[in-house]
Image (cartoon, rainbow, N blue to C red; front, side, top):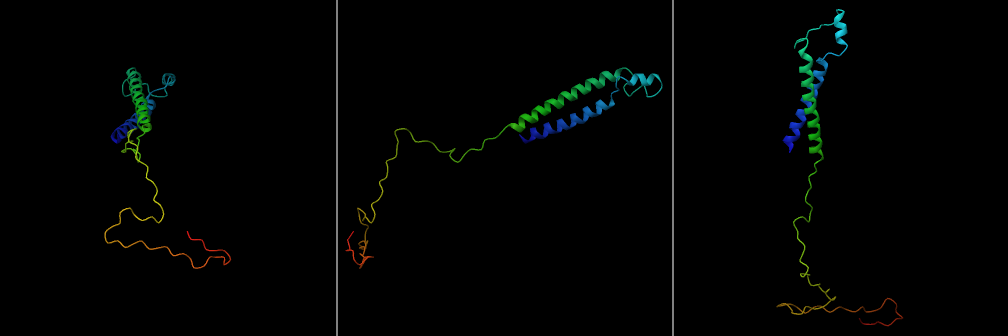
Length: 140
């Protein structure tokens, strides 16, 4: 896509400069009046009568190329590429395949099957005295 952007930009610049040069080369409608009194040249590079047709047609062609390249640049510039998101490669599970919920483990629970050569879990020691001396100690 980068080469298309470069091509359209070059076409737009060349056609814009060409239109400017061709418009400046053309004679205005009041130029014939000045030529009648001797100021200004009535002849040109392409001849006295044929220059208006050639220059006006060339100007129209380059103006059309300019407008088309401008529309092309607008189209290429507004084309947004979408970047795939983080979850673009993942799939949803089927409706019947709901994973089983995992029950939370009980605190300080011993495993159901003890491992080989595993020592017995350590017993939790009860505090010797409570914070307040007047209250009895209740085991948990």
